[in-house]
Image (cartoon, rainbow, N blue to C red; front, side, top):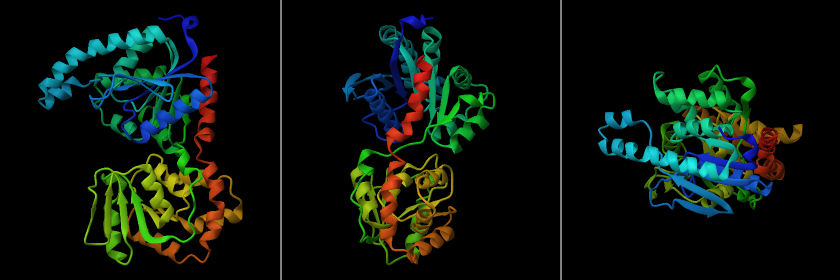
Length: 392
């Protein structure tokens, strides 16, 4: 075990299961935390999976070093799926990766390691924690805690996860909804370890040009998976044939249908933002949502919104309204509707907004107050205070 005196007290490894240039919520949170800590004089380095394999083993972005390794796990699952090649790869790469990580930690001696999305790094973190005894933070983002609940109670993987959670100094969830799931899944975890680390939005969403004269189309964005509820959009499009429905997200091919649905496929955040600014309404039909960053982005763009009352979405709404006075909250509630994840409820929400008697100018006037609630600096201040306490 490494002596505490030999550690760099303001040094942190951020360890997401996947990272830049792969895009996604986990990757966004990890890079924003790194930039925030770098600004606050921390030495920040990343460890992540080298996937796709064409990525460099080592790279520097925004003065932060990225170290990519080959992480393989669950050899029994490889056997069950007849992936003998992955079994042999696991036998080869597992010890090599562990040795390389030990050498890296011996050189850097980080004080803190923050895991994001427990997945391919569980055993390696357990081993390194035993050797170097760093402060451990584990951050959950939604799908990770749901995946863990499906793991066999007899698996070694679950054993290592439980050990890491017991040894962690801090466990964060991206919403109260997720922290409750963590507590339910792991009832032996001490409640004082659990804290909420809400997501922010990218800087481009904090002060976009707001548009008073909206274009006559509805917009939605999300992955093409059942929990995002985008199948409900196709049902809505039949009810509102006079309105184009534009849908962006991974899993859709870019195509303009003969109907009133236009599929953009996976697009840059700038195109998401442009559509949110211009559209007459953003519809978020999720059946489950850990936080709902798309809701926060739509709010910051001054979009009228119909969103489902599931997961962390209601918390996003409360954050948005936290600095508004009572009159402003009334205006907000006219232009932003929470409904159930069904076609009927979504129709009711759309109709309520369409019939609003309050001018949209009144709604857009309060958006700058809403935007301030989702800056990463605001969201990460408490996290940073926790880090400072851990480093003492």
